[in-house]
Image (cartoon, rainbow, N blue to C red):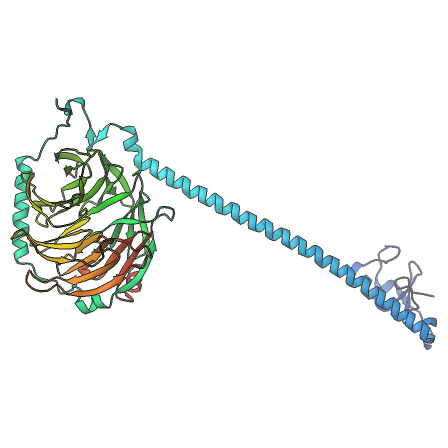
Length: 520
């Protein structure tokens, strides 16, 4: 008798009461435990239905094949064949599993690419929506210029636009403010918190921030908020970026210009930013509670590229200067052009402009190497400073009110405004490397020059030598530093080049300390 499950003679035989079939005890017990029925008839079956069969304990005879060497070899061959067949089946299963895994990974990768593309399209849609919302006022009122609707009767018989002019009340306001600032300047002292010379000697790059587009790299202008740790950059990519240095985050991107932004300035009140562009327009941006900026005015008074914007000391007026050989004096709250000075021309033009700290003197640089000084009260030309070669690229008045620094292809010239003369010249680069930026710090203690590198000098007086404190290399690899600006108390410098990165130079560890304070 053989077992109904294994087909072999059972060692411990049992029989089912219901079916009469013979089983091996250990096999039927496990089957009943797992399934609760007979493996042959499929009837319900329990161990109570199983009866032990009493047999004599006999020695199990060897199989016939094991009785000879050829039989044993045959058994081994059969086992080997079975093992090889089993191994082949396992390899086939492994190959199938690998194919399924590869297909699943490919589907996962494709899904990730689709998700990334959808996120990019979502972000672009949000950006376009934001731009549309910001430009909605301009779109709904296409005739807006200078903050108000242009009427036909604003054009005079000579074809020129009629300007209201700077009235006597405005002149009196500017003069009174000038008198107050002059009195304060006489009592001015160097702040104790100003970074000392040995600190500037230890400055190094402490951070770099990619703020602008990679396909149109280049930062052309930088300004720092007078009371906040916020930096604005204007780029070749037509955007201006408002950046929080402490947190390392972009607060807002100002989009709307159609060409590169050549100049920008913070207004020290009312959360305003002014941008000038090669698209011939000036835009005024109003900050909001959520940190974004909306375009409040689009000013279209220039007929060529706007090269400079500069804010008057009262923070109520500003000037733009353009390559059309004119400069415009604006009222900030309304965006009205009160006066346009100069005759529009296609030859030459203004390349830079800056207000004197007291607010009644305006300096402009021209493409014909001249530095011109203007009286704001009368809008009259006062004097020329000659001596540069090549276009005047930048200018900066010292806070002491006596010095003016101007930059051009031949380097930097320092002018004494009391005697109207050039008293010192720096020529840091060769004839093929122009100086692109020059900047006094707010205390008037340091002067920064930027061209193929950045150089910081200690400000002295007319007679004493202005010592070079340190030279910082251009880390952008472009060989052209376009702008440099001192932070509060000269505790850091913000540097822009012809790549997309804003670079911060300061004492090692300062950036991490600022970010920790921001997090707290």
